[in-house]
Length: 234
Image 1 (cartoon, rainbow, N blue to C red):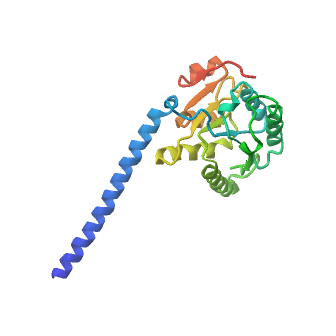
Image 2 (spheres, rainbow, N blue to C red):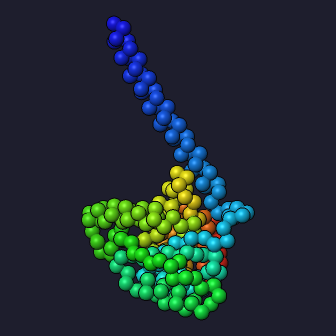
Image 3 (cartoon, rainbow, N blue to C red):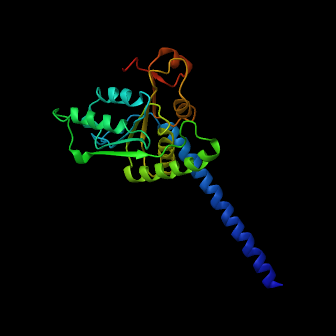
């Protein structure tokens, strides 16, 4: 009889301990999520580094041209080392990025070649790809994005619309919540988006993943009040 009671109490204690662990974990994650949402968009604390490791997401269809135009007006010495990422099927964007960096070589803000890295990432779904097969490619893309984020661990992420930025930004946001790494996400919506946001922009805006969200048309700022209107950057 005593053995039966001991076994019963042991099971109850085990269930209670597991239940307590789940409650504590849930409260921790909720607290971290609220903290991240509160802190997002706040300026870097005093004493922060004068330069930040930066991940720059490039994309076809004009995204790369817009991003390089944006980079040309920034103080590039503050965004180093720099990591350029483009889709695995995008053969031109990284070439343009290298040409852009070569054009900075003669400027005082030029950085060493070792501070520049270029990488490609798998797409979640290609144009015209069936939704059935895209399940597998999406999983592969997420795992690849996770590996890249662990390897790069950027302090700043710059993106402007390509779909390849979604898994990277999603993982960066998850790292914030878990307290692994704080990556400030700056999203600039494409100038081609006049009346509504792109799917990438809409996801980052609605899910509050971007620390700062910029649009290039005043109509969009009225429609999405948390966005900042900066005028046309091209």
